Amino acid sequence: MEESLIISDSCIGCGQCVKVCIRGHLAVGTDKKVHETESAYSCFRCGHCVSVCPKDAVRLKSPEGGVETIFDKCPVPPGSLAELYRQRRSQRWFDRKCTEDELRDLMSTLRYAPTAENSQRVEYAVIDHRFPQFMELLASILRSHTDEHPRLKQFVEYVDNGQKEVNNPFTWEGRQIIVAFARFPIDAIIPIEQLDLMAFAMGLGGFHSRWMLQAAENDPKRFMSFFPEISPDLQAYAVYIVGHPRVRYRRTVPRDERKILWK
Image (tube, rainbow, N blue to C red; front, side, top):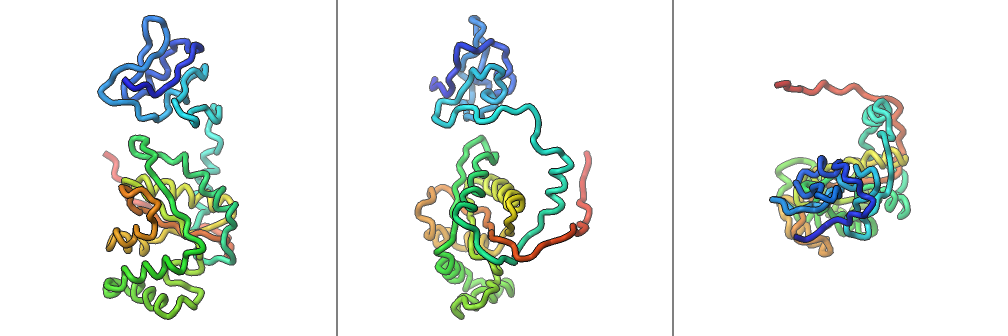
């Protein structure tokens, strides 16, 4: 059995880690200590055992395996989080781009987003100085699809005319793009939405782009040719445009109630 954990002598055999292990990978032995065991599914390094241990006796076998934060309650009250959801709005009007430090701070929050089976197989691309070339690639892919929607035709014409206007029909005034690549759509969507909320908290803003994803769907090979450094088994599943807002939204806007089926 390949061991994935470091279990120190400070283990008191309380069994808390055993209770949270969904893989059945841990058991309390006759020595009253926790040990890794053979199970139908191998450890997928979710870290629940590390997080619940009262004695900090369990660590993942990796340089990043230490416990970074000790907490006993949610740092954000429910009311504050609900207010964040209400106040956040899509932002398409920007007065300037984000600095490199701002982008790095923003991207640093993505590592804690959940992924299927804790694969952590999500990679990102930040498009900044190669923005015009990326627009040209999108137009070359979508050119044969302009009859599907007026916005596609408008965008291709914008690129063909030299991208001279401020209002790009896909990004409006935005000039920086973040693309998330993953094995499954949900693994990319969750972190990009977390990024969206963090951008709002940082005084930045942005919006999700559906049209750029259409280019990735229409011709994934050509789309991915712009990102040769991305692992070949990943696909683009989320695109986000970001910048400094030049418009201040002053109030929330009522939304329709969502249909909820209770069974």
